[in-house]
Amino acid sequence: MPRSGERHLPHWPPGLPRQLTLPQTSLWFNVEVSANRYPDKPFIVYYETPLSYAQFRADCERLAGWLQQDCGVQAGDRVLLYMQNCPQWAIAYYAILRANAVVVPVNPMNRADELRHYVQDSDARTALVAQELYPQIAPLLDGPEGLRRVGVAAYADYLRQPTDLALPPAVEAPREAITTNGVSLWREILALRRVPGPHTAGPDDLCVMPYTSGTTGQPKGCMHTHRSAMSTLVGGVQWFARTQDTVFLSVLPFFHVTGMAGGMNGPLYAGATVVVLTRWDSDVAAQCIQRHRIGIWQAISTMVVDFLSNPRLGEYDLSSLQGIRGGGAAMPAAIAKKLKELTGLDYVEGFGMSETLAATHINPLHRPKPQCLGIPVFDVDARVLDPQTLQEVAPGETGEIVIHAPQVMQGYWKQPQATAESFIHIDGKRFLRTGDLAYVDAEGYYFMVDRLKRMINASGYKVWPAEVESLMYRHPAIHEACVIAANDDRRGETVKALVVLKPQVRGQVSEDDIIRWTHEHMAAYKSPRIVELVDTLPKSGTGKILWRELQERERAQPRA
Image 1: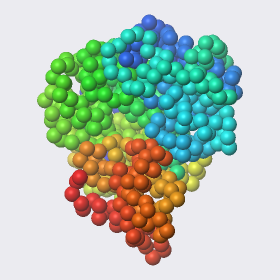
Image 2: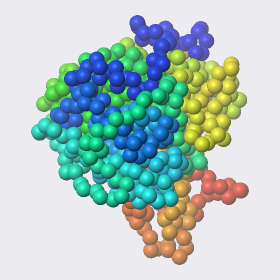
Image 3: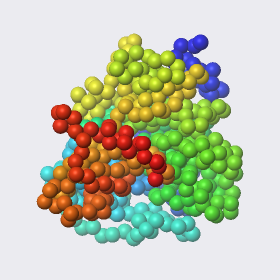
Image 4: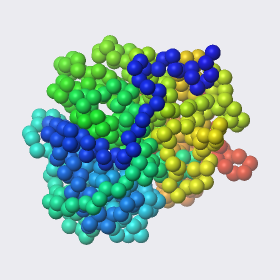
């Protein structure tokens, strides 16, 4: 029997090395290489409008010059990026890197109350935002939060050819004139033709800082270098054997590490083309697959469910698809079977975190297993340990996944204690404690069992109850709140809040009132869809709310 870390090696993808030699450059160099190699080739196709590699580089350069000269962005500064998927998202990302700064990607579903923390914690002074999201960022401009300059992008600026594709309202909305001090419009910024200074960032400089939450409730910035970001983008291209002639459907959000690495950074490195949709639309996705002969589609399980339920699906030629992959939530067996029957393809699942900037585990293409996290990819030392003793468990036994790999973050921004608690040292190596409970089968494949951390997985979005509770306590009528996961056939899990109202407002505030308020004050994916008003919440002898007892009680209920 091979030792635990080698059981998967007999099933390693044929022809692939087990280690990767990573480029010793910043991510910006990937733009230079692909723009020089394929200047006239489309990097992005946005609702039928192509953006060539040469034009992409030119727009990045101009925006980087504006960041440096007009906004005072210096090496290592953090810049907030707050948009839905669009050409400007990719341009902004690489312009920030070209300016030697650090990208802080923010979920476009977040509201002003949530954004305030990202701005304050990251010390960002500049933000690049989409037009329809500007009202959420406006209250944070030139106030105690620290934002000084904001660049506002209208999606329609990159619609330069007619299309019969259905456009989301935000995409077809005309550019608005915003005259607030400190605000500049995207088209005006590029028209300045600012020339940036030298690019000096290297592989060990900070590159991107996605935020993740945890049991304490406040989101924490995961510090990734150009090297750790390079690891997942190069690894994904190699694992899936993609080339410069591959066409990707990029519908997973770019702010999320999976969409960022697999839907943008990897294809750019390869010199490939990405077809970008701002909002998921199953019919538009099918049209694009047929028109652009898309080969690779990254998707979460709920997208695939929606795609397969499209009554017009039989009208489209999907024969160009060569791979459908994703993660975040297990794919239901019945849906995977239906997908296989339609396309002849397996849904290839993987596992990753914000702390690892996408995948550390992926199923081998030639031998995937259903509802499986896969096997450790290039240079990943993953183990399953008893969470208490930190000793490795036997095959088939459940324990916590710990990971040593080049894609693991440096730590949490300004959080030395949280960083120290998230890492352990084994055999002289630093391992990240994932908080995910899994087991490894006899062939070295990893299977998720549960989560050690308190977290809700709603359609692949991670929701941290403590963060939602913290926001809910701002409601003037709420005395106590406890957030748990409720069963949901479509989302897997959904967010439920048990609420104790203040005595003076009982009978005056309804469950629907609370739901409406939360939708106005937090991202839709994390706001409770179910609110139950209760008289009391169970507590421990020290007064702590017994959330686990409430969660176990809820799990015993049949699915809604």
